[in-house]
Image (cartoon, rainbow, N blue to C red; front, side):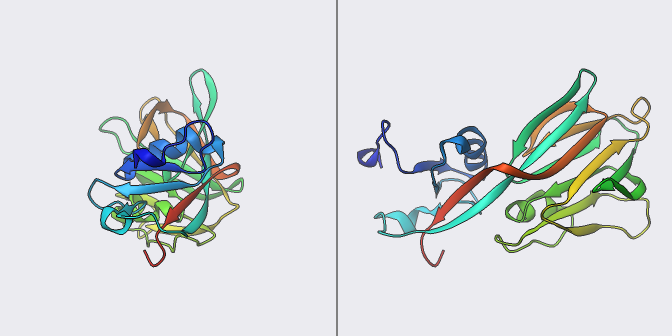
Amino acid sequence: FRRFENRKNPNMILVVGGDGSMLHAVRSLWRMRLPFLGVNAGHRGFLLNERSELRRLPDTFMAWHLPLLYVEYLTGSGWKSCVAFNDAWVERKNTQTAWLRVLINGQARLKRLVADGVLIATAAGSTAYARAMGAPPLPVDAAELVLVGSNVLEPPGWKSAVLAHNSIAEFVAMDPRKRPVSAFADGIPLGEVRAMRVRTSRIAAAELCFVSGH
């Protein structure tokens, strides 16, 4: 692919690797507003094309315009923020089960969630950790978010929920001293937090390209 490289005036970002490589590229380079073309050199590669499909570059691609998550998290030094493509979550930091209050659009929907943690994912990210935790995967172009708990004890029987794409989800640690929680965005540790607030970004988005029929 080196013969196609144009660093001065590129029209596409080529990512060779696995899904982790694509996630890193998107978070680092989404501001360039260029489409991303992935070539799978890893295992599953949900976000990439298979190498056999790209023996020659086709004239046209199918492109998905996918918004990122805007993630805010409260640490001991105040609020911080980042973006995520797949998901963001909080989980217990020690042996104590996490006690979390889950608010949707400012309203407490789960007044006390007793679990190992809770995660929110985009439609594109619903096939990753959210699916492994038992949430239903969504079509990549679905205008929804997925909320799912990890090893939920209370409320009994609650597992997951599908939220409107413009929902604002907030996770608040109810007893941060005894039951501290850590936060993650696309698997990247954000440290110990007291709260996390997540919504679909109004600015950050990525366009992923696939071979037609992929």
